Length: 342
Image 1: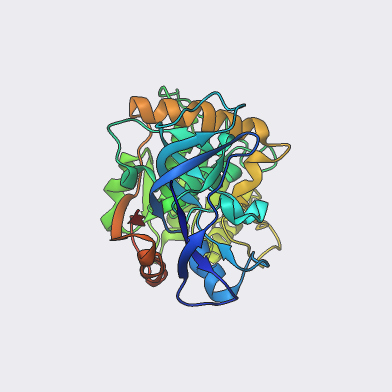
Image 2: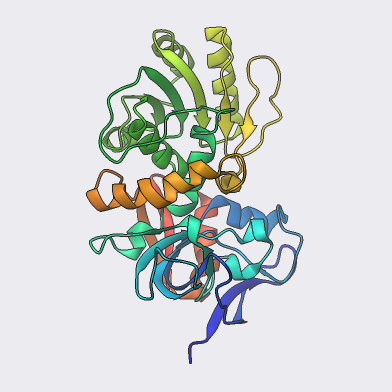
């Protein structure tokens, strides 16, 4: 009989995680159980461990990105069967239920946040995507944010809209670039010179070095000649907030600004909206989540129009290496995503 095991955080700021037995889950309505093969690390994981953000219940299990094979499905789930290869955005932070978190052998996932993956794609490759997909979509598509057309798995015609994505080589940024391009938008982004070729391969039209002393002037000049509809800040640090604010000041224009972390710079033309990755499965954005996870991602992964990027950097095998992986991510990575195989 299968047994579950997890990397638990049993008290605020506990370090390292405690690896021990976890309850063997069963799927509830609209859920599936996954036999985990790989997980990836996001900045929110170490920030919760270090600072206690977003978490009030202990013991708990962290982790948002899972890839593996379907172990069991609820009777009402028709998209999947036992043995299917899948990725899942595990949203335990939203449900407050550790069974819905990724850092365990058998997580439970909601059907509407799961996609099949092609046989040609390894679990290590695929697992870089889930949270990045939800987070990018939560900023790009809602009507009160960038309001882009929903993406197509067949290359769309340019629609005249231009977006600025700050941090195109990051995990969320690489996904946002691909989604915006699949929506027909012209994509202007930033990256270090070493990653310019990489982000262009994802669909970026123009790339600027974010460290250039004239990057604000250069981007403002490029945007001034376009139908500029908004900014997606995939970095969300003081440096990116300041740069985006300066660009909008130079353009004398106010547009929606979505950011993956909150900012206190909410005056004048710069009023960023903190993107909550779980927003696409809540009203009024449920249609967005249905389109992305049940139609676009399965089709685009199958035909190769959507890439699992950035590439994984595998730091270990087994739950005992989850802590090491968080430590590596916290030190900073460039155009890579930290992954642990299980």
